Length: 224
Ligand SMILES: Cc1cc2nc3c(=O)[nH]c(=O)nc-3n(C[C@H](O)[C@H](O)[C@H](O)COP(=O)(O)O)c2cc1C
Image (cartoon, rainbow, N blue to C red):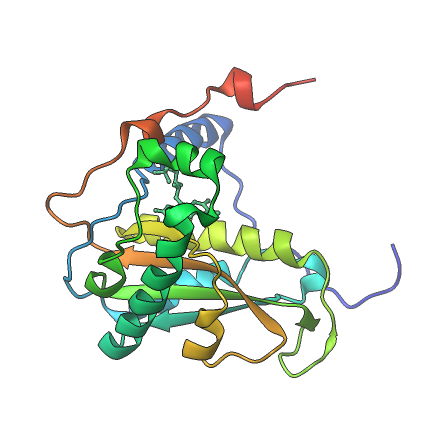
C-alpha cells in the first residue's frame, strides 16, 4: 500500500458466530417489513429523526470518498404543495402515454397513477441530488467518480435508516425530475436523483400484492 495517513480500526465489533447468525436473521425479518406505501398520515415526525437518517446515509461508501450527494428535507407545506403540483403535471403526461405501453403495463399491478396526494400529506419529503463535480470538501470542483452507484448506495441506506427508525417510505421518481432543482434551489452541477416520501402510514395504507413477490435466494444469487 502507498504511504497515506491512517488511524487504527478501533470501532469494529466482533460478535460470536452464533450471535452473527441471529443478528443477520433478525435484520432480515426487520427488512422484510419495509414496504413502499402510497398513503401517508399527516402525523408529525420530529426533525431530529430525519437528521439522524440523513446522517446515516452520509456514512455511505462513495467513489474516492467524494460523497457526491445532497439531501433536501422538505417539511414546509408550501414547498410540498409546489412539489406535488409539478410532479402531478409531469406524471399526467407520463401516464397519458409518454411512458410507452410496456412501462405502463409493468406499472399496472401497482395501481399507481398521476395523482400524488401523499406529496402533501406526508410530513417529510427528502429530495436527493447527485453531484458531478465536488470532492471531499463541499466547495471543491473536482470530478466525482461512480456518482450514480454512490448516490444509489446512500439512498438505500437512507431508506433502511428511515425504516429502522419506524417510518414508512416511498421511493418516487417523477419523470422528468428537473423541477426539483429550482424548487429546492440547488446549483447547476447537481441533478435530482430521487424523492423519498416518509412518515407514518395512513390507517388504510395497503401493499400491492405484486410488490410482495420477492425473488428467492436461488434466483438472486449464486455461490461459487
Ligand atoms: C428507482 C425506483 C423508482 C421508483 N419510482 C416509483 C415511483 O415513481 N412511484 C411509485 O409509486 N413507486 C416507485 N418505486 C417503488 C417501487 O414500485 C417499489 O419499490 C416496488 O414495487 C417494490 O415494492 P416494495 O418497495 O414495497 O418492496 C420506485 C422504486 C425504485 C427503486
